[in-house]
Amino acid sequence: MHHIPLPPDHVYTVDDFDFELPPALIAQHPAAERSGSRLLDGTGSTPVDRVFRDLPGLLAPSDLLVFNDTRVIKARLFGEKPTGGAVEALIERVLPGTHEVLAHLRASKSPRAGSLLRFADGAFEAEVLGRSGPDGGLFHLRFPADPLVLLEAHGHVPLPPYITHADGADDVARYQTVFADKPGAVAAPTASLHFDAAVLAALDGRGVRRAQVTLHVGAGTFQPVRNTSLAEHQMHSEWYEVPETTVAAIAATRAAGGRIVAAGTTTLRALESAALGGSLQPGARETDVFITPGFHFRVVDLLITNFHLPRSTLLMLVSAFAGHAQARALYRHAIESGYRFYSYGDAMLLERRGG
View: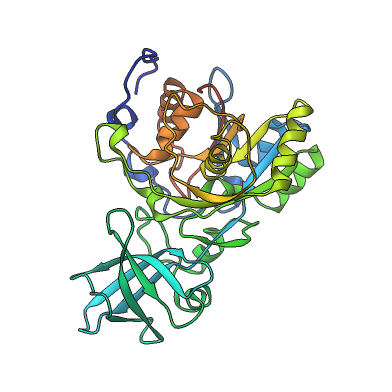
């Protein structure tokens, strides 16, 4: 890793966001206490090692902390095709107002439209309606009843691909934020996993106000960028909503000279997507924004985030926000200092220096 800033006209490629991570630093289980995770404070000229419960003291009473209140659904199902062959489904999206879902399917041979898949030892069947998505990579399925009810009863926690154990009771509780509310995500907004009742109470005591957005995180969040050129990457789409109350809270914070603090890249993604037209707009819509160095940030001043996969869109977002050289230096410090990486890992606090 280098600290040398790249020239302003540098054309970034995926290699600019690669790094070597010792496998032992990939957290397989959460910390004993949510707020007992480490927090790398990257807001100053040199990194400072802290603990997550220190966060309230790093914020000012005039600041506004914005969360993503999405709830992770038990989106992984195991079953079989009519031929008896094993099939695994990861529900990417529940289609509103229907019994239909879009899903990734893993099977020895792709099931055809019209076929039935038996899930959860025959507890229910789902009909394959066809393929979906820009590249046909998703399957359109119809469930016999409300998919959210069936998934809660028969599904498994959709742990990320780099977590090697099967989901257990600990994951049901810990791969979910304490303020999860609106079901629909297939991956947790992991920076918010560090918040617990004690930290929230300390934030309240400090006078830091809170607001929320909703962004249902998709499985595409784990996809590496495979093209050397960033311009060739097709970003996955996610549904989000920014309430009018949050827009008003952000405006009031700005007027009072406070800062907007995003809990996680998904919160930042929702807020910046809603402001792409120049000003922050309330409402619900889809976003496929790809945030890379040079992006013009309009809303977020501070970002709380975990440590992300090499060559990932989230690492590119962090590099755009904090500055590429600063992000590289912080990741180098984290690796040298034994920080825990990825969804169950530690966090860092960043100040906007890019865009």
